[in-house]
Structures are given as structure tokens and as C-alpha cells.
Image (cartoon, rainbow, N blue to C red; front, side, top):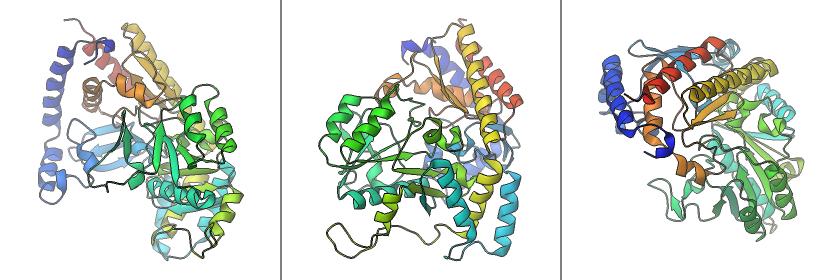
Length: 453
């Protein structure tokens, strides 16, 4: 473990052994379900990352309400992972539950439009300032379609992104850059990602050099990187990014799937950004499958254009049988108009601020060099003593043993921490008491991990 963390590696290892034993004692049924599941599911889980994102076994959930869920062993957890931002509305918001009941009773899928789709598109247009929208079942699929539209509209094949930006599980997006290009996962075609390049976030000179080639249909990025902890843009970075893309005829696509929890129009509205396309998902479906992407009027016209730039007839490669199904649209309408209100966003952001303030006070009280990340309702810890400006710095600063111990320690005290280095987020269903509970558990962790005896 890196000495910059300011704690003893041997003590971290000892605490890990103790907490692991405690976790196993408290979750016999969850562990038994995992063993049963190994007979019918690879790795004993319905989705493989459930077995790899935590250094300890996952719990199996029985039910959840508000900001809490209960596992198969009857243990209750405050959910600060919030479904990787998909349950930012809370686990069972009443307007969404009512919408599901009404729509399921009237038919969930027709492969035909319902009026709810218009209402959702209109509300997304109002929030993000882009007039035209299309729907998918996930943000991964929405990103895939947005890139197709960018290539169609510009006639350019390549995409530029930033190292550490995760755009979903489309093949071309699963490329990692750690000094060299490599495929992030097994099973991908060798040529996957050959048309996507990446530079480090906040590195304006690298961005200028890449875009000067005129080869890129678009830049795809989150407004702030959220899969490397939180990496915030430098002052003026977005202004320069937008100027460079316009100068070079490159479209700007902002993926707000995680950052839409920051406000009613995501960081696009909060920071006054001006993208050509926006991708959203997760929270707008209140935990049900939904993705969407919005586009400018010019791109909407290109979308409708039934010919390629060479004049050949054709149709843009979009759509899926269950896309924009009646149930998804009813849920999104309820989530956007009755749950994700300006007041709800203000409430969650205030909780996130109080959480970050509390984390800083605890860390400072123990003389540790750690830094606290802040992004509206979301907070987190950088154990290295600096706030990373790029994914490269975030990777250099990572403390996996300490991070794994933190989430295990919190789990044993009724706090379900965020995946990997994401950091906790407060949903609109959370309360000040929930923030206090997190801080009590975190304070115990800091006292134990920094103790000298």
C-alpha cells in the first residue's frame, strides 16, 4: 500500500481479516445463496461484475424501501451506492410505484408509442435544452446510437474520448488506455475500439493535437469523470473543449448518466454547457431499464435523412423491440415530473454537502492526508492526499486495499458503500439521519485504521 495514505499496511490487513470473519458470520444465508447460484450462473451471480466489483461476497437483497434495503439475512443497509445512480429517486418512490401498477394493468408493451413518450421527450428537452430525443433500454445503448448518429452526420469514422471515461458496454467503448491501447475485457473482437482514441482529461494540448487532425466525428465525455472517483474539469476546460470541437467541425456528446443527479438538467444546466448531444439513463427510469439521448435540431434533421452522405438510400442503425416500451415511458414520466423535482435535487445536494463536510472534519481530526471529493449529492475519499485531475493521476493514487477495507467495514455497520472508488451518494429519499449514520461508521473506521497500537 502506498505510504501517502498515512496508515499502516499491516494494520489494514489485520482489520481486513477481522471484518471478513464478521461479515461471514452475519451473512450465512447470503453466502449459501451464492453457493446455490454457482450451479446455475457463472461466478454464482446473475451479472458477472457482481462477483468482481467487491473484494467481499455480495449480499442477496430481499426488499428495499426509501434509502434502505434488507438482505436475505435480515440485515438492513443504508444504500449509498444507489444502484450506481439508477435508484437516485429512492428504491420505491410512490409516484413510480403507482405508475408501474397502472401501466402494467393496462399493458406494458405494444411496440407502438404511447403519449407518455411525448411527455418524457418534452420534459428532457426542457431540462437539457436539446429539442429531439430517442429512447433505448440503457445508457450503454444510447451511447452506441449517439455515436452512430455522429458518424452519419459528419461522415467521419473516429471518436475521441478521455482516458477513464466509461461510456458503457458497447464493444468500441471497452478500450483501456494505460500507456497503450488495450481491450478492457475478454471476448471482444481484436479490432474493437480501433476507431476510438483517448487523451487525458484536462490535458488541453493533447486535446488540441487530436482534434486538429479533423478525423473525429465527436468527442464523447462525461462533464466530470465519475468512474475514477470524481475528476473535476479545470477552470475553463469545458469552454476550450467546446471551442475546439466547433472549430474542427467535431460534435460534442456529453454522457450525463451519472452526473444527471447533480440537478434537473445535469451538469449541462448547472455549468452552462452547450453539447450537440446528451446521453442520459439510470435515474430517469427510477431503477427500471431506460436510456435516452437528445440532439440538436440539426442532428435531428440528419437523423431523419434517409440517405447517406454519398446519396445512397438507407436508415440510421437505431432501435430495439423493447425500446420506448409503454412501461418505461410511464415510469420515466412519473420520475421526472413527480420525483426528480428541483426541491428534491436541492435536498440531495444539501445532504451531499453535509456528508463531505463531515468527512473532512473526521479526516482532519485524525491528521490524515486524505482529500474529499465533492459533486453535489456525491462525495468520496482520495486516500493519496490530492484530488486527481485525470484518470492517469487517479490510477496512480489508487489504494485498493484501503478502499476495499472501507466498504467492508461500512457493510458490517449497515452502510452499503458505492462500487469501486465511486464514493457515496445521497438519494432524494435519504435524510440527515442517514448522513449522520454514515459519518458515525466512517469515524469508527478512521479511528481504527489510524490507531498506533
